[in-house]
Image (cartoon, rainbow, N blue to C red; front, side, top):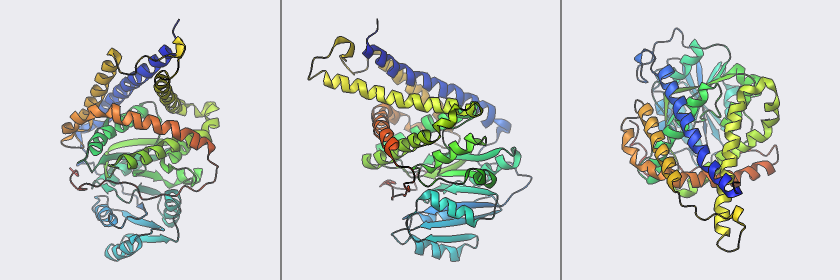
Length: 424
């Protein structure tokens, strides 16, 4: 009979192994089914039969050093019928003055000032209320859009059906000079990119990327726009749209260059917020999943739930191993070693295979991506530990959080290195 520890160890090993192949197979299918049609690439999108007006919503909080670059690239878009609405969310720096100056420079830029920091969700709600257009594109204040990004996003709405509620783009890392930056380049391909492709195969995605996503206003009106008391507004809006039976798609050609944390402290805060947001969403909408009509969300929810269980299992194994050094544990709870054996080698090779598959898929969008393959050997050690720890801490935080507490934002760690070196 297997001991409790043996059961936990098997689950801790086989779950990431199984999911790695699910993501790889799903992403490969997606790649050859949707990404290779007509041999088109992201720099040469097809002409659209029409160009409906679009409002780009740009929420800003303490973005004085980055807003000008972001807005400059927005007005380099090849999509001919768009405006930009910048919402200054009570910034404590001179973001407001920078935006007012830019408003004089760009005729299709409108600037809205909020008196105090209300959070990204509220800023998006204000921008949506100001806009008169049916289609809204949301980006972050530090994002740099590829010139064809809005065109690729809107192509889905022009050619898609009336039930299409949102299209999320393909965020790419700009700052890559530190070890954390290099690892995140691979992560956004092998984890985030692969997962979105695989999830699209079974019809639902866990979340859009809030840094680059387009919405249909009609869909937003039906669900009541953005919720202001969830720490991750992008996960929340994704679930509510799909629970209301709207389709959410992924468009890898819609590139967006973003800045990511390059310190352990900044990375920890970011991943803790992501983990807490996922738990908050499941807590709030979990009961709806019991309905048969919501069954298309079951696989996404199950994948998330099992990943949470996996984090607690791994933590329990480490805790039992440490505890065994101080007290005598019964054999069925004793962990002799947490140093990987043959199974660790198999998992490591699978991880490297996953990175290789993702790099092969995303190389068309991000030239020179292969040079970061070597650095991915550190991913399981560094990021699995951080992500596991943040999940273990975030779940009780989400469960204990009172409904209605406004989710405001603070200036994140966006790196300390050169910021323009990686835009192709």
